[in-house]
Image 1 (cartoon, protein in one colour):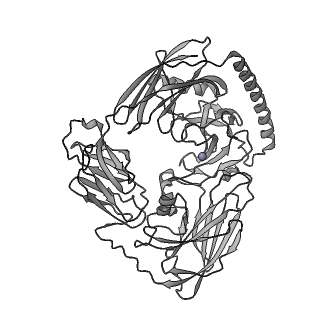
Image 2: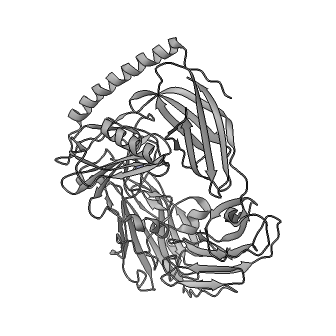
Image 3: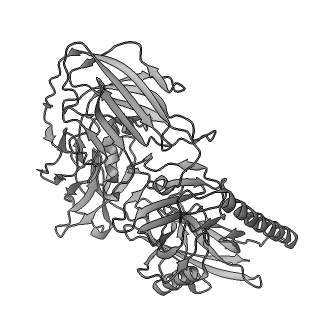
Length: 586
Ligand SMILES: [Zn+2]
């Protein structure tokens, strides 16, 4: 049993007064903001009260995806009013623990959809009521509603939500996105006038010259990192760089919009070879389905090792991103004498930096993949490697360059293992776009029921990570694999542990005073799959952090304080369940 108290009445009154003051201040800002921010697009207006200070640009490189919108700063606060960019109707409402969190989609008459993500809450009473009704009816914590007809109309500048930090957000901000209604492709909001102040040129951090690996790409490639002057927007590398005849070019760069510390993305870049354009990249829009191809636009093995992103001026064979263009053989230039290069990078506002350098070919390349015991995998081709207790399927969309791997079956070397350890071994790291499918067969009799079995990954550090997978009729398990490593079937029979401590306080949320209750688990091997919270005998929606270890209930402040019962039930991905009852006083 846990005992918590509502704030003392004096403190509580002070808080209310302060909150009232804040509200008035925000309305004042709103007027100023609308009159000062002349919207560049005819019908689109500001989406929130801050001026457009951005912390993320469109197309910016993120982990395994391109950033699909712009991130607007909210001064590290939540609860700022978010305004509809233009008139339209609410066409989609999403409540999710991951990704966009609480998000609103508005369809505008001209075939454009605007998206507002990571909200603290929705502002329109009809939306709040509709979402709550569906959540209670289905007893679903997460929900998604689509409206194909203009049921909920909004005016330009109307407050539609409160900015927040929900879903996969790593700090309070507003993610604003523009999409084409039919294709659902996100596009750069700058194309309809959503721009921000940025007069600072992007900066080169390193020029990178590659000696390709045996597959002629980044796999097992050698890199020559040549530091550049980050302050110089038009620089020349003085020495001539010696290269292999199959060399290719990459670079590390960053952009700043102002004095803010956060870094933005490079919007476009071009490589000229002896003054001829040989590689071009410009991101205005993309398909969500292709977003993972970012891993073959960057030097993936380098990123996997260092978390640093080198952009390549080379199209790897399986990289079908439509907004990169390269000459079929970018290095088909006279091998004698110096080759002159100019690299040009631009940020979203067209600020440009240039890097000029010369190379000379001193070595003729013979890239042939012949690695002992390895099986060569080519992009665009599928392969099926069948062993005694394992099968690995590399799909035709898994790879974007030639790599080599082998599947090794080790013995069962731990009491907890239900299968042999299956190792996917490779001498280098490589990007996997569509996951490979690994099937492992059990090889040991066990009394543990099969519904508790799962594929796990054994890390070099000795830790065991949950992979999951789908069980087949012969009790083998097929899981999605994106990296080499060691994999095994184990069982998860340990129930999640709900912590005794519970936190409960009055907060300002969604523009109103609410009670916030937080319950946590210790963290579970296979992860929390489902959870449910019942307050005073009634199911109540709760959100969770993306990791699924923290559950938050935001509810009305009761008219009169008193004792309340909260029952929390959590179940992990292997079906182990835990229940705990809490007593609250508020
Ligand atoms: Zn964002």
